[in-house]
Length: 400
Image (cartoon, rainbow, N blue to C red; front, side, top):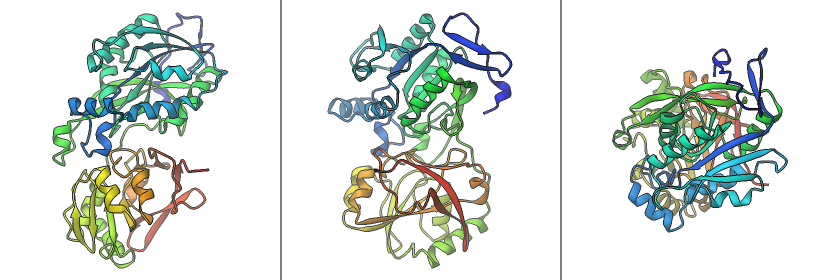
């Protein structure tokens, strides 16, 4: 985020104030355009690498798999009922029923064309929100939904995403749904900076072929508070084979990685380190090995759940550059359900020093809260080289 590029919005509404000396915007009352992509994130646990399989996703949604709705419930539970908010919303399945749990004033302004809403409905709803002059568009989805919103809204008004996609490389999302209440409170009662963030999306067909081809589709103006907005993914610098070899030596000698039941996470760091150990893993999928041999490749959540039952498992993870996510972005197959099904689990975190330097704090955004045994006093160990570990701050929602 670059505060020097923060945007000052035109003073056309009485409920909006701008502090010209600090270049920040606050609101007396906040009007919100609320929109939900109902099928966002359904491809995560199914190892689809996204949710381009729209027909199948709607079939699962209508059978009760409503991942995005669960994320909304988490977000709404964080909002104080004392905040002066007014919601403009869309008819079902794009969010109408979800607003029933809120006591704020609200008005339905858009009805989707069919009971299976589309990207076109998202765009049309955003046009209505702009006509209504809302102060903020709050959307629920992933990079694809952010891309649709960007195509209509651009830098006209602030936009904020409740994370509910599979990858979420774009910089317009909350770190966690539960952070929503704090952001809204800050917009109303604090001096919050509105700054541009990149909207990225990947080609899912290439993604499924272990190729990452991310495209910049524009920018959205995002309300910022340190530690609450994830920012965009930062690509790691090219690492040398010696770095991967050094990490692999530690995993083999000290962590017994080739003698146990191990879940291999996504990402190029894990891919290259395992290659040093003679194991060809899926670059962007979740694989399982036992005694140094691959049991299953590119597994979905159900498969991992079945394999983990009653086992002591190790989970090899690397954080996303810049964002710091270990779980909850691009690897939703590793669910709280699958972890609870194991007899015990241990997180093994690996990273090059260069990538770790791009991360302020590590993040875990599981589908449900879970105590992580490897977190000690808010820190977790990260293996960066042979016999070399760094203690890194980690933000995780735990039970109790």
